[in-house]
Image (cartoon, rainbow, N blue to C red):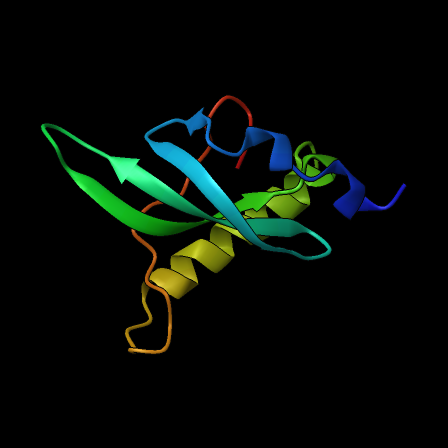
Length: 95
């Protein structure tokens, strides 16, 4: 099975934790990226890029550790051409 065949375009316009998935930017071999709206207290809204592990890799502990390591390293980077990391984790079994 091709991992990209299990993408989550069916989640568009649905809530994923504090995020509402607006549109899919792209999908690679191990993860896919979405434009999402992050909501907070009051009328707080922030447009973000959300990277989600493909369902095919969700139970692969080695891959999840790699994904978390990537997030931690990327969070240390500061450059106008690099998307900043504001959060990472798991929601309902999905990283």
